[in-house]
Image 1 (cartoon, rainbow, N blue to C red):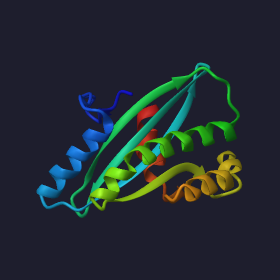
Image 2: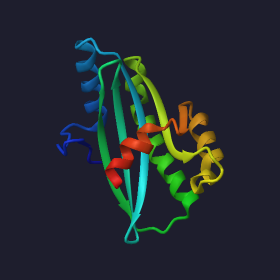
Image 3: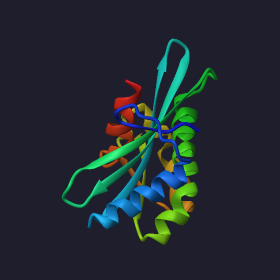
Image 4: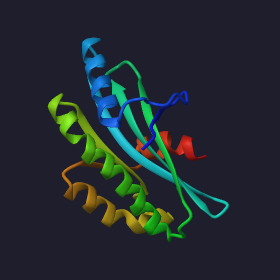
Amino acid sequence: MDWQKYNGEYLRLPIQHAVETTIIREKELGNKLKVFIGTDSQVKRGMIEFATVIVFLREHKGGFMFIHKDRSGHKMTIKERMLVEVQKSIDIAYLLCPILDLYEVDLEVHADINTNPNFESNVALKEAMGYILGMGFVFKAKPESFASTNCANKIVQ
């Protein structure tokens, strides 16, 4: 799985090692980190482009993110696509959990799903919330889900 920084530079380490190295570096610099994971997607010419992000926020000092992009030619309903986004975020959160727990870094999983029933994505809200909370993660949806709604969205636009 290829991960890169926002500037396009590819990470040379497996994502678990890159995250651990980042946490150690930031702690040595005296920064308190919080991690947010989210995925967004966009349908373009019959292909679905997905972007999953790991956002690192430094308390009072800005942040940065790691990005993974992939595509699917599989046709999906809006509900199916929202739940695939959630699955991609959970997969990464689950992979990183032991590292985040070891260094006592808080984690939130963000879903690009609207809490307002007037929006299409709302059809997946209950399932997404149940899935993320059931896995033991903190769940955020729109308008609080900036990792997916803003950060990942910038990558797939």
